[in-house]
Length: 291
Ligand code: MF3
Ligand code: CO
Image: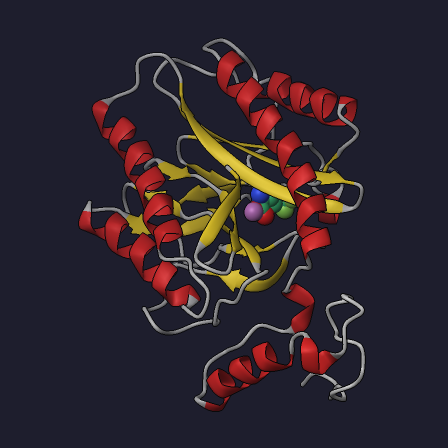
């Protein structure tokens, strides 16, 4: 429950305007959804215009780093080299890689190759080979604001089967984004992602999802892809979250490397792909802030 605000009190959004002239009607609308049993967003995940501007600055760094990786990634490169590029570029632009030392994560980026689902450790022993598919997951803190996105790259000659997995996973995110609008539901997005993956014979990892982002690295809501249209959290303008499904060619089951507690693999050893976008719910739809 949120604290009750008086009509003449300053609005919770820090606009300096009286509540009755600011977010009162907005909150009443949210309350009517809550009364119908819907999950509704707490105020602290609804970003102000000022916060959104600062988060967009962070996103610019994340995009620039991934653009550079996209141009320069190649067969024979080690994933440790990618880690160094991410660290150097991010810090040169005044940012901090958000994963570095996050809950003990020891690198500036996650590089997940083939059957690695996510949180792959960059390593000088992992040399990218022709035929590999690799996810590079970047996140930045800039002046305290967070951005987070990831892309897939195909190295050298990649099989049609793996290329299709990479392509369909990207389409899953696009179809998810197309469902993001104010006064819709997170489940509208989740079902769109899910249905496209399964229609192509793939599965989607259940245990690891996207997340609210911006003020913290990981905020509410948790973003899954096994929810149905019309369910899960109500979407309202000012929410920012990631859409980042991990799509498996085989079964959805995964395991975590016990030695390091981070790296996640498919149980069946078949490849997995992931693209991650960061989206802002706007007054009339959504805006992709980072990809
Ligand atoms: N981009 C990932 C995410 O969506 C990064 C988490 S990796 C971690 O949350 F190692 F830092 F946790
Ligand atoms: Co993320």
